[in-house]
Image (cartoon, rainbow, N blue to C red; front, side):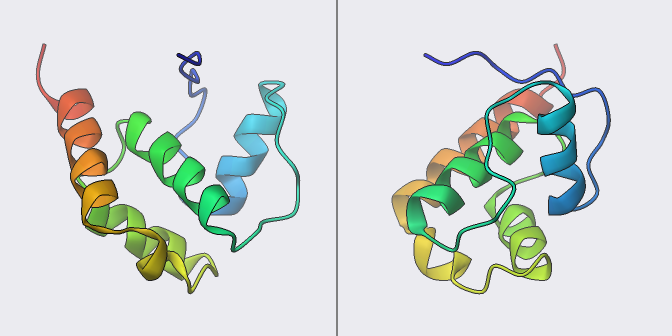
Length: 93
């Protein structure tokens, strides 16, 4: 299992998210790809940030940030996974 990213800021958009990764030394390419694997990785990382309520808010953010193919990339299984990750991290401890 890969290590969870420690967010030093609350990224309001994809560009800021990438900047946070860069500042924290994460290995990430500066160019965004509309490839399904890249979308899924970013969506999972967004869910793990604890800043999103579920897959709908993640999809909306990614579409607003210029990834129009995100709807096709997030199938039902991935949507359930993202919802579960979001709920787990947003649940009171």
